[in-house]
Image (tube, rainbow, N blue to C red; front, side):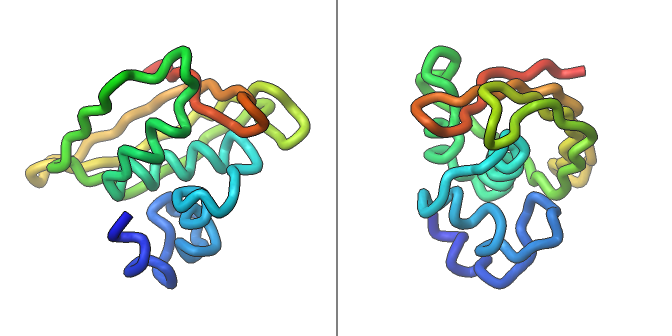
Length: 133
């Protein structure tokens, strides 16, 4: 991913307040697994913000993963608010994250409010599906 080198010391796109290389950077690069469902959710938001299709597909459960992921490169994802989590700790097998993601396209702002489900698969957290609310 070409953008990650320039982001190393900048704040992570997931709006955690941490530097990219202390937050989602190592998860996107494969250096580290996401330790919780929330950490995976944050890395997936960051992948959307950076256009990292590879991470998005690799972090999707094989039974629900699309064959092809078509992203809108004109849509800018700029803020993530985690509203609640249920389960998804390092000691659990399933988890749920409710969030609002903020985006803009052509100067028009929008939000996506979703309840996402996660499972452990082959020893790592993966995204199963989400329900837009």
